[in-house]
Length: 195
Image (cartoon, rainbow, N blue to C red; front, side, top):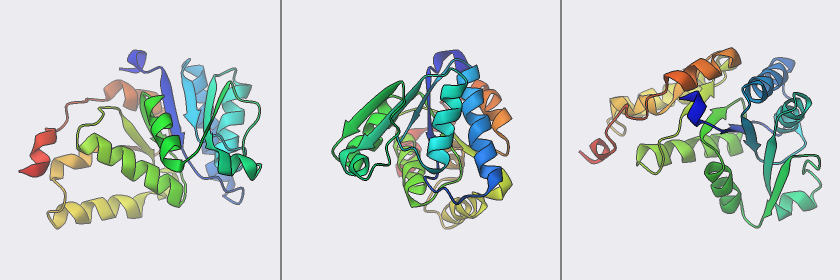
């Protein structure tokens, strides 16, 4: 599967206040993506884990594509040394372009924006708009509460049991490439959502 994947979108925090462990994971993730010869796609910012992941991929001689809104660019939070940069008008355009330019999604620790991006690409996968891998890097159990909420959705019959397989959950970035290699786009029947 990894040979079919040319670009990997990373969703993560723009906060500079995150703990060092998360910064280290961002660096390791970027090195793995660049080392595999894949393009990193991300939200175009220079701050927080977003800036760290971009810089680490560039330092590893990787290609980095950033997509940011004009509004955020005007706040001077855009990264100006990327391989390719795109300025769009709305957050919807930003997320759409990032998804279109990506063959897989990797989720690191983040806040509301990261949660929204994760939920959106997962929803698109659930209803069959794409069949791309979604890998949650659950470092230090960061995403446990989200995964518990998914379990509650299943328990309450709001979500099918099989749709838990929308995500691949790993604890360490070193498992990103094996997760991509083991990805099965046919883990569930999209039409079963409405049964």
